[in-house]
Length: 243
Image (cartoon, rainbow, N blue to C red):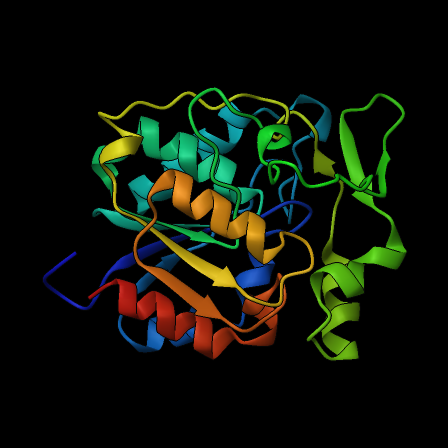
């Protein structure tokens, strides 16, 4: 990117979270003159959509509205599972996006789902997830939340975050993305790699970065949740990507 240092950011949260997770980052970006839009994806945060009916297409439509609200080409940031949604949004709204930024996020290639994004040859430990009776949503076992997602956050922050988590609609991660070189493939793709992440390990992050041709790659020495444990540093990296 070139030109003005002031940009529009659309921040897309990951599984179980909502727009609330960006609260500590947004003021730092706004202080530098940026416009920031952080939507609640359907069924999460304060959005009241029934998780049972939520699809990847619903997430993409939500992101499309946020891009329209930005009023200019935006830097589209996706955290964790949000990487699936911003990838499909990149395909469908490429002309509205200045750059994609994957924040310790899943980066699927054409035809892939979340389940395909594993490190080749690595043993896959079962994820301690709790599914709803109809399998339409899933939840985290309480004992893994702090160590896997917030291990560098203070106790008050962890308690606050846990109080805001909601069941994740299952339809998002089970849907294949469809992308082309002409749309998603032509967008600049940056990756912020969280070196202490215990949810998406650093080797898996590096594997996805290499496959997808992400550049630049920016390391940040945090857990899976830098928006809570290092919001000013994270905002600084995002600001740098607007240059």
